[in-house]
Amino acid sequence: MSLAAYELLQRHPQLLDNTLIIGNGAELPPEWQQQVQQSGSHILTWDWQTFQQYTMLDEDHKHFAMPQNQIQTLQPKQIILFWPKAKTQALNLIELIASQTQIESIYAVAANDAGGKSIGKACSELASHSDKIDSARRCSLWQLTLIPQAPMNWLKKAESFAHQQQNYLTLPGVFCHGKLDVGTRVLLEHLPAPAHGKVLDLGCGSGVIGLSLKQQQPALELTLGDVDAFALRSAELNAMRMGIKADVIASDGLHDIDGRFDFIISNPPFHQGKDTDYRFAQSLFQQAKQHLVTDGQLWIVANRHLSYEEWGQQYFASCEVLAQQEGFKIICLSHAKK
Ligand SMILES: C[S@@+](CC[C@H](N)C(=O)[O-])C[C@H]1O[C@@H](n2cnc3c(N)ncnc32)[C@H](O)[C@@H]1O
Image 1: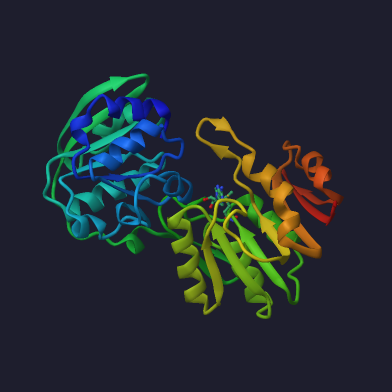
Image 2: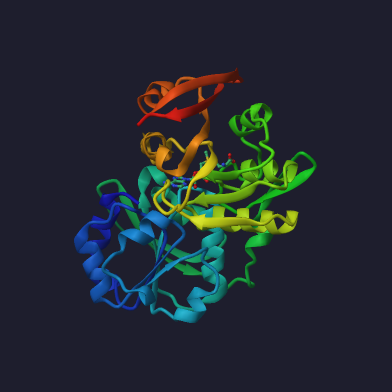
């Protein structure tokens, strides 16, 4: 969610009145948070960064989870959906809302270049009415009257992919929904599965990197971390289905991770919104030392054009490009500098 979308919402203070705000948007204007708090509204987000930014709300009014039964439990008067960029996920959320509520005051908001312009059209099969009630600063706010739907099950919306005779499920919105990413595949082709030790798969998505290593080497101790509750749930379900024990942790980068690891492995995110964003990788290089044992290694897969070696060398004495294939490179960093 862009700042402009919050500004658009702030032109309609009546929309905040025992409202359930569903969605993500980590750069909150302070006044917005204050308005949410004063109105007694709730926020339900699947993004750990968004959840943590709502510092003014007490634990009863902010919820980090995949949206499921919260609408029934909280019985809000109104709902505002921050329309997510992944259209399938957005429509699944609309279907979920329509399956759980009869209330008419349902709003959806987004930047026009993130689907905001066409929310009405996108919802044509799920809404009997859709009205664009405001637009400004390249954002649109819609009011939707939804057609009641049968109960929705996220598992039925999941897509799977196969890797090493194992099916990995991905819930809507999870990276590479239903497919194994080419970069991840290249990483897994070149990554020697260590026989033992502690492994952290950071930005785990479906958990395919860590889980496939542990499947090959059951003695590994595995931690999977991600900011996204849909990813964490997918990873948890995949671990359960494979009978693998793993710690699954909501973490913004390394921020919420405790302890030291023999291996930190990641296919780092580098796109957020329209602009390229390397913050995850940069802070991973910078902070990995505090989470690696003395001879620990950081393994990264990256698009060939990204200058990760340059950044990595600032913090590690050894930085080897172990393979280059299909537009990706695999980098192993070790001997963290003092
Ligand atoms: C490129 S995907 C890789 C997913 C998975 N490891 C794979 O290879 O299929 C990056 C993942 O990082 C997660 N992510 C994005 N920002 C993050 C952050 N600040 N902290 C932790 N995870 C993050 C995303 O939710 C996504 O699942």
